[in-house]
Image (cartoon, rainbow, N blue to C red; front, side, top):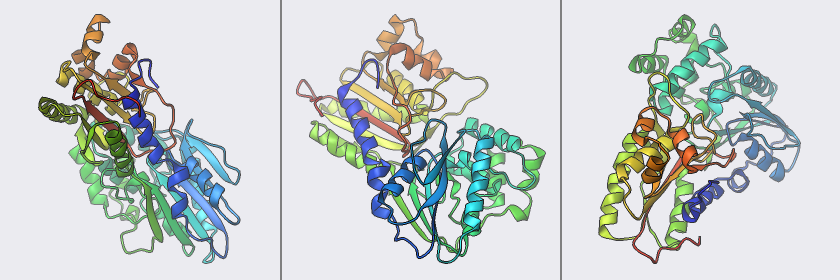
Length: 423
């Protein structure tokens, strides 16, 4: 995974990924087959793996389509796998969304629509509301992603500019039976927020969406402004029939597995929770302070956490994502403190716009950077964390993992020479 592997840190990350793979977490939640047809639709980074898990366990006829980011597909025999752009949508995602609406519209009361939803689905289901172009949606999405807005706020806007999200796909499927399986990548695990909830009613409003753009000082294109003022674009509200909804995997599942593995490796696990939000460098500073306090006590401790941090970008920026930014800010805050090393990765295998999942840091990170002529503080300020860790050989590269419960972080604090690395 990295040019300078740390066996314990990488093994803990691998344990986190194994805990939230579709082949293990989807089958226990499959609904009973209907009297009529079963049509599968889905979107997100885990959608193809979820579709394959359904195919392997489903007893009866099956058809449908799912959309995933480019490079995240897997082979399915009965369910079509479509690839499209993420995080800024493209025409392939728009066509995939139209196809799913058409599939849902042809169902009757004896049929089942099985929706497979995971993080990343919002960008992939890129069917704009009437009067809004795909270019308009791309402009607003890009501005929101650069603004530092949390995912719930971003998806509030997306739902109200969409012809499929925010429960509209469920409305199109009536009167068919509906079941939704969710791999959650959002803090708090609200299933209606994951992929902007195409099959789930939406509690947010057009006014909320307008407030998000105002809060983050985003001036939308005229078509977007008009759409967010049009009552016809209000989303279906709670109270509408949504069928069965199951969160099949979440950050908490990964962290529980990692805590058990860390304990087996001789560390006292401290679970900081799977819902941490905030600026990546600010979260890193808080975690570094906590790690230093534990180190002062002399105990072997593993601080584990998940969630979704953000990075606010002004102007041009280099390559790297929020996990690499967290890792670089953490290294600076720890300032070479002996006995502390860490990993920060996105569980989907793609951190921001880089080719890495994230990075590892250790007591020698800053010293090796100086020897290589790298200015860690300047590269953090310029959001060039990806280039920093790539130059050191400390980037963690997995490729698409085909799951997504968002950020994974672990800080290991050594107690002494008895520390194990044989997970």
